[in-house]
Image (tube, rainbow over all chains, first blue to last red):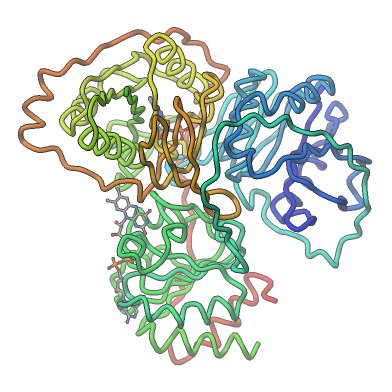
Length: 322
Length: 246
Ligand SMILES: Cc1cc2nc3c(=O)[nH]c(=O)nc-3n(C[C@H](O)[C@H](O)[C@H](O)COP(=O)(O)OP(=O)(O)OC[C@H]3O[C@@H](n4cnc5c(N)ncnc54)[C@H](O)[C@@H]3O)c2cc1C
Ligand SMILES: Nc1ncnc2c1ncn2[C@@H]1O[C@H](COP(=O)(O)O)[C@@H](O)[C@H]1O
């Protein structure tokens, strides 16, 4: 018997796209294997919970936390741990986020469950989960033996690909079982700054990235306009954030964020291997560069050769007309 | 204050990954190995702290095979005081974390610095596992670190933004830039590294649930279509077809 708990993420009380696709995936596993039972959990505070009607689960356990969860100790999870034990949960799925990584690591150590990350694919055979992982920053794939026994699996963003738009699926409201955390933390928050309005890079379906080819931080206006027009998040290369032209949280690559949007448009970025390491999970890649020998060209689906200062504004205009 | 920096030894990103036709595994002999770039940030910050306040001792720890020793020596050349290698070939994050926990339990450290993630398996989990195993404070990813009033002040990234937090020690941190500038070993550092101590212990737990049975190179073939800059509408049409644009 596999009791599979899917940890769902919400944003403004709505299921995130990553959670929706993970839930759909877990549900199909449960439908195809009669020994898999599905349970829903969340570590976010929610007022109501709507899930696709096709998912045959009638309630969700909400473990109420606030921002302190980012730095509270193991003891804060006591209630959650005993709930998971009582429900006999053997497998946990969640999608990658800073919070889910923290909770996954803690639970894995407390419950002695195996921990699997960066999952590329998953099959269930003979009651075992067989995983493939993406390794070396996406350059290679490793297949693993079937895991015997309980595990916690953390799926990268966009794991199962296509997301069905909200207006095309019927949803139902399910019951919430509230569970609270006993916060134990000696840390004090001195300052908090929240990302507001802008689309979060790691969640974004479209990303516009820009590099040293922009020449000056003032010139980011054209990048922001393009991003605004196509509802994209903005990203940058490492030297750009090192120069303080752009904030560090925008830097993608081997030492920055790894992104896997449906579309990545790279403007004035040479495509050094360390940059590619962060973006090669993207669906479609467009490269705008005036150097036909830029390494990025070999890793692009569409290439526009020329001056980004004329191409980017023109592209923005054309998208605006669509 | 005792600081422990845990380092991963990983293939350099620029090395080309290949595989023999007949073999199930990637060719390791062609790869160049480096200290994980995030771990380099962690080590650099530890050394900056050592250089700026008194009574700080920095140790470097790696769980892995003897082949890693030249890279561990490089960390000593950068300014770490001594190093520990726990000998073995770990298969999972949990195994590595347990080895680190065991060592820390016997040797008491105030601050454990790691990289945000190792760039081989990109898990970013070991610092969380170690913190959980030791019940220490834990933050990741940490972008700024200052030692203040017996404790530390860190700037961290959360899923919603950034926070600056004051916390007590002991703590485990997963570091990322811009926490410090990468350092290059000095000639003197290289000379003194030879005489610094590198202790070797055996891994206590060699069993793992985990086994990689096959590795392959991931080749995403990109379309490589050139769009004339005069005809950008062709790009828009193509994108509309590839991804449902709304
Ligand atoms: C260990 C290590 C880790 C690293 N990690 C990362 C990382 O995580 N992320 C990262 O991005 N980098 C990383 N780097 C740095 C990386 O190697 C490159 O130096 C960096 O990505 C280059 O940034 P860039 O493409 O913006 O700049 P450049 O290489 O200077 O490229 C600028 C590009 O803009 C083009 N250009 C200039 N003017 C125009 C114009 N008018 N119109 C169109 N195109 C124009 C040029 O042809 C050129 O291709 C790392 C390096 C090391 C050693
Ligand atoms: N074999 C190892 N020995 C010691 N520390 C390690 C080892 N592997 C990873 N680490 C540390 O754990 C961090 C996170 O690694 P990971 O969870 O594997 O992504 C790395 O940045 C290192 O600081």
